[in-house]
Length: 171
Image (cartoon, rainbow, N blue to C red; front, side, top):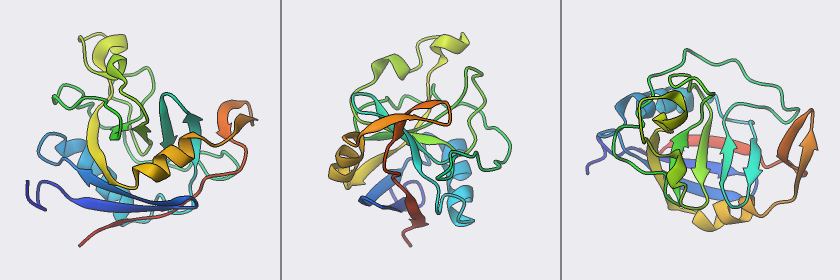
C-alpha cells in the first residue's frame, strides 16, 4: 500500500510514542474522520480515559478531568470492511447506536473477535477497525498495565492520567 492509502500518524503520549498506520483503502470514512481531528490538533492534551488490560485502551474524547470534548458529527460504521479487531489494531469507539462514532478510538490489547461484524443488528454490527499499531506496541502494553480505578462515576480510569501529548501525520 502507498502513503496515499496508508497514511501514518505518530501519537506522542506521556508514556511514549505509538506509530499507527491507517487503512484508507478499507476504512476511508473512519480514516478521513480521524485525520480531520488529527490535523486540527483535537487530540492534543486529551487522555486515555478507559484502560482494560485484557481488552483495550481507549482515548480521544476526554480531558484530564474526564470532561468530554466537543466533537463533530457521527460517521458511518465501517465494521463490514473485513478488518478484524486483532491485537494492535485501532478501531472507532461508539455507543450502542451503530453509526455513532465521532472522535474516540481504541487500541485492541488482545484479539477481540466479539467486536467484529457478525450481523446487521446493533449488538452484532461490530466496531470499525481503521488502522494498526506499527511501532510502539510496548507503549500500548505499558499503558494497558497501569493501575485503574473509578473517577467521576467512570470505571477503568487510569489512576495516574495517561495523556495524549500530540498526534501528528508523518509527511
